[in-house]
Length: 167
Image (cartoon, rainbow, N blue to C red; front, top):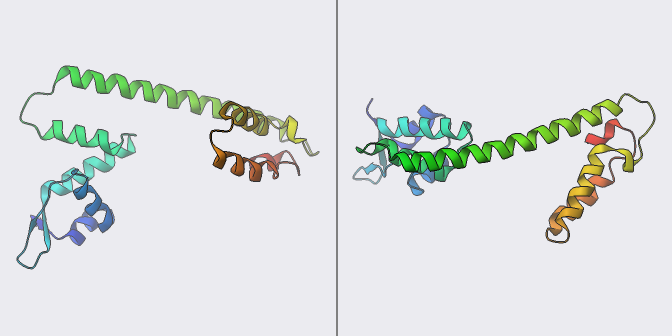
């Protein structure tokens, strides 16, 4: 089959119909032809595009980045080396930041696990997770009030035992 309704396309690509409409609205997939009665009729290219979008998302690309990648992919021109270099360097910096954040989180959780074997409750002040949240809260200051209210709710849940630190 070479032509697909929006429902068929959604089913074929394992996304919601609303997702297909969103991708169309954002220019990630081509505007489809319409039947006389107004139904969208998508081509096989839309299936390929949605699969590429979902794969690129799984790699951590944003929809804006994916749109740029798709435009370059569909272009008849050679890939612009300077643009590709810029995008690659930018993404590498983002990945490095994410890796640093994950390493910090891993270290923090390892500290929590290390003290979680004791049978006695841990004071909030000695819980590595609570210490980290407190330091973060102090760094953020009064800029983000929603963080403070969420922090206040979380803070009250860490006094029962060391294992409860993560709840």
